[in-house]
Length: 140
Image (cartoon, rainbow, N blue to C red):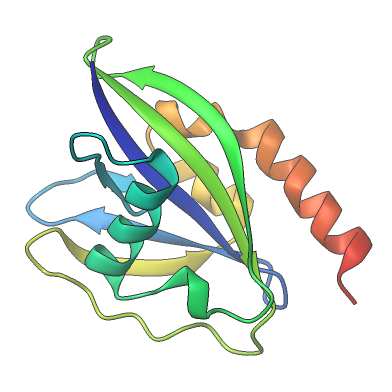
């Protein structure tokens, strides 16, 4: 089974998620990619975020990174290892797309995200709601 790892990146101040579209494709997604042999899933997710959109989550203000869970897709050939990352910055971080991987991005609400992403990623909806609730309780 191939493991892919990705991050639902959430701006607490703006209450929006980062969504991307694969180059030469029609799929909308979170930034994600395949883990390399022996690489920890969290390392893969952070690396893929930096490679695909140029955002280093470790440089975001007061970031938190939480494992949400795993979900199989592509007829059981792949598993998405999903993480949630929230941050406090006043502005959205600068995005520098790796055009070989992704060619468009948007900052969207959770509802907009759930309308567009693959059903594999929609499975994390209730966990994202819980994380957003935690953010609103502890972030002022």
